[in-house]
Length: 245
Image (cartoon, rainbow, N blue to C red):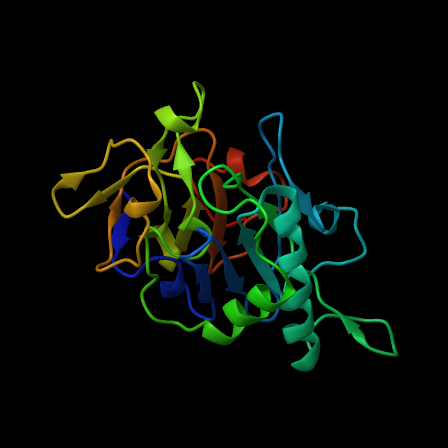
C-alpha cells in the first residue's frame, strides 16, 4: 500500500517547484524544474486541452529528455509563459543540443481562469521566468498560488455557480524505493478541517496561509506526475499499480 510522504512533488529528489502569482488580476503559473535525464510522457483527456511542446513527449520524438513542465492560467494566451521558462533554462545551458545553442523542452498545459479576474492580463514570458527564479525544493505551497490563483471547478452552469479550486501535490512511496508525486490544478481544496464549496468571488483569492490537504482531483484537472524510477513512456494514466519498468 503506497504511503504518503509530506511535502509533495519536491520530495522526489532533484525536482524543484516555483510559483508566480498575480493576485490583482487573479492568474498565475507554476513550473516544475526537472533533474537531468527526466523522461516525459503524456495522456490528454477532454475536449478543450490547451498545450505546448506536448509532441516532444511522444515515444518516437527525437527529444528524450524534459527540462521543465509548466502549468499556467490564461487559457491559450497563458502558453506564452513557457517562453520565460525556456529563456531561464537556456541561460543554464539546459536543453536539446543543436550545436549553436540548447533548446529546452518545456511541455506546457493551461487552465481557463479568464472569467474570474482581469481577462486582459494573462501569464506571460516574464511571469514564467519569475516562477523559475522562485523554484526550490521546499514543500510545495498549495491552494490559490501559481496556476491555482484563478483555478475554479464546477463551471458547467457558468462561473457564478463555480467553486474555488487551486494547485496541489502529494508524494507517495511504493515498492523498491519508488517515489511517485502527482501534482494538479483546478481541484477542490480542504484547509485543515474547512471545506470550501463556496461561490466564487475575487475576494476569495488570496495567498495561501498553510499547506493544504487535497481531495481527489476532478476529471477537469491538469496533472504532473514525477517519479524517481524510469517507469515507461506509454501514457502515464495507465500505470496502475505503479511499478518500475
